[in-house]
Amino acid sequence: MFFPSLDYREYFYILCLNRNNKVLGYCQISAGGLCGTIADVRMIMQTALKSSATSIILAHNHPSGNLVPSEADKDLTKKIREAGKFLDIAVLDHLILTSESYFSFADEGLM
Image (cartoon, rainbow, N blue to C red; front, side, top):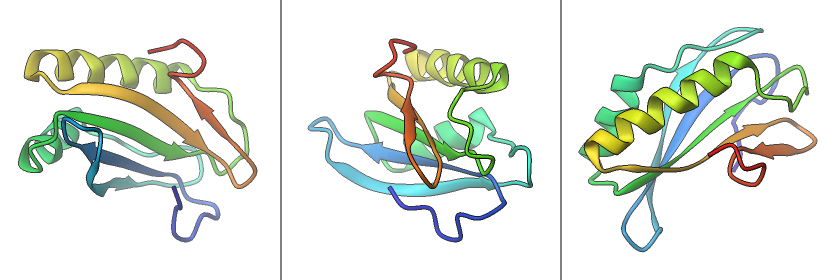
């Protein structure tokens, strides 16, 4: 995945997928500042519902280059997964991207 203007700002995106895990589309949820961005669970689920997604993948960047998820990242992922369970929308992964690499919650057993 590519983040336009991946420089000093933090961005939060979601990928919306169908039952066959084909990408229906992606949406920028928020654009923040140097140290964070606000990702509203309601906006994320609204986007997933409007696209008729059956699953989503979360993604945001860390401009600092630090791939370690913060407690806020973990808490947000948990909240979104709980909302997804209620709406029958699976949250498949949460990716943290830097200019050099990425961190996958799913790969690290955090989903």
